[in-house]
Image 1 (spheres, one colour):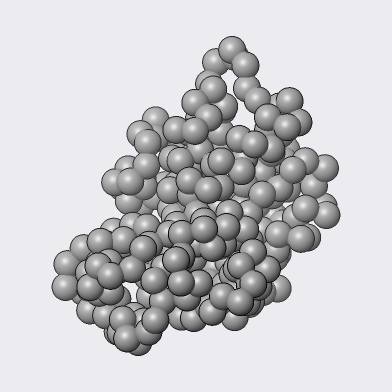
Image 2: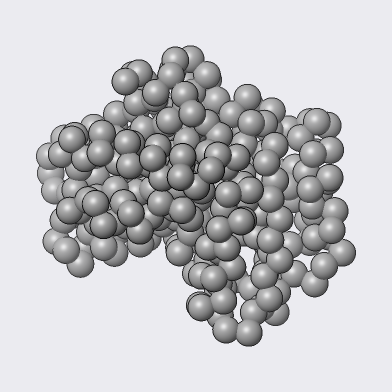
Length: 254
């Protein structure tokens, strides 16, 4: 599993809860975070580098635990690797299409994710006739990475980004970045607690479980190991990541 930083740990936490007998390797590309403001070409290059490194560790399945990378690099990763590769956009879109009563759905994400139109297309295919309103929130990722997840500063940023959604007709909002659940409380407050918030972590974990089961790849009785790697100093990753994920016994730099 890889993400640009700490956000993908929300997916890892759901995956470990759903599949407690599976060993995991998590790679946070902290040297190049955030992905959401980078060009699609750069994100594809970073993603291929991360995927190739993880594949050398004898993995049986890769989770792209980053909405930006899922939006712009998933087809290339699925073509290059001889193992299953799952992104987080399709599971998140499915959850949103199911949760919405009206078919009026909002999506917030990084500029790259929103500009790709990936969520808009996925939701439209899953729920024809739905309306999708998308907004980019570029400051949310650096706020989450720095641990600024509560208080007046993130709340002011959330109100700035989301004020137009409060007046819209949407009843469901997709947190279209794995970092955004860290800011769930201030996002909900900025939206006056009137929308159903959806993130893709649980849905992605279910999809992984179903795929492993269908291919008879579920873990057995072997000892379970969880390894964490980053591409920069692990200090900030360890501090921020420990606030919302399972305990990290050791984090290594590559």
